[in-house]
Amino acid sequence: MKSVLRSLAATCFALMLLVGISVSSANAATVEVKLGTDGGMLAFEPSSITINAGDKVKFVNNKLAPHNAVFDGHDELSHPDLAFAPGESWEKTFATAGSYDFYCEPHRGAGMVGTVVVK
Image 1 (spheres, one colour):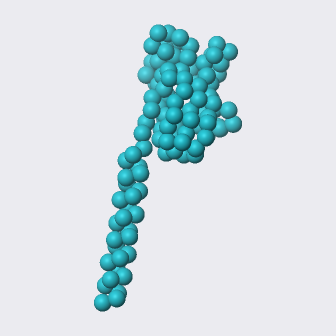
Image 2 (cartoon, rainbow, N blue to C red; image 1 turned 135 degrees about the vertical axis):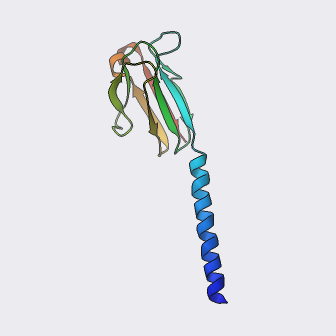
Image 3 (spheres, rainbow, N blue to C red; image 1 turned 120 degrees about the horizontal axis):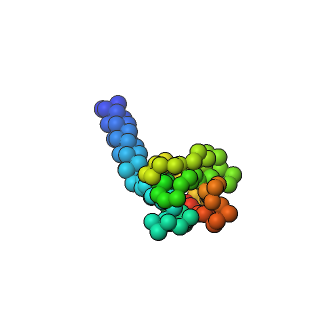
């Protein structure tokens, strides 16, 4: 009887763990950042976003290419390749809380900078 109860308890624990992992993955969000505003300005739109740890940011080339997104001190988050085609995109997952500043290399001097805040 004890072995049956232990097996049942172990199965319940494994099931709860699996459900917990599935729920946390399902709750991850993807936030879009446009590279170049709809109005044709050299800026990220939006330029500042706040997300939760585990969420993704999808960078989408919009106007006045070429663009990229480079994160100071975070090569793993940077996308140094230039996007030329409208709609070209890539995603980055932010796993750790903090504030991450980024910029477009060709347009940094024009003020094309942004921040991702991860809670």
